Image 1: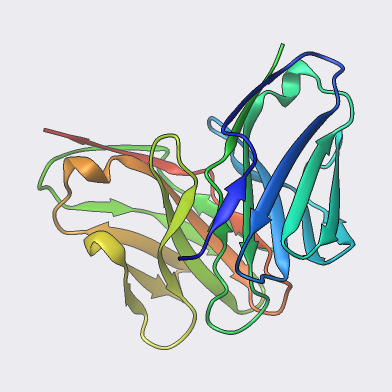
Image 2: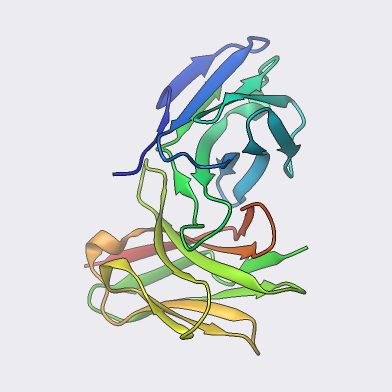
Length: 114
Length: 114
């Protein structure tokens, strides 16, 4: 069974802390994505990566950075957490081509910044 | 760039009634279309997808959707809903030439009442 795992389901951090959210997929997918989900706003793309060490900004990259040193792992970094980054964070992965081009999602990390 | 509009943010319906969740998209090139479902406190999972061929696609849990190119729509339907269908539903579009990035709608919350 295909799997995308995220390091934490719930996380509470303080303003100004550096926060790491980790995502691992076991499907050998080229593409990986980080979204944040807020009520009424749907999914907004923060960053995505289409290969190891490659990254592109999504729609809302400000305040975030990413790292992809290995194909299976994609990390989201909040350099200095702020209260407006309290949200649900979803990681996803996908193949580039073929018929299996939907995204597979992790369970999400609900981050609260106090 | 492509965009997705889900026309209803909330759809309340009684158990065993039919339901339609509406999705319109815009794109200047060919697209792939997806519907995902998100149950409470979980990530998204694929319901169904349209890549090419027959415009009526069937998915899991008795859902189906029809691709209408002239109306640029991809509405989701189920003839008889269950309480367990209560969830948030997302329509997504992906340009078939890019690296796998999808654009998501804002979501429709389906609430099935007894």
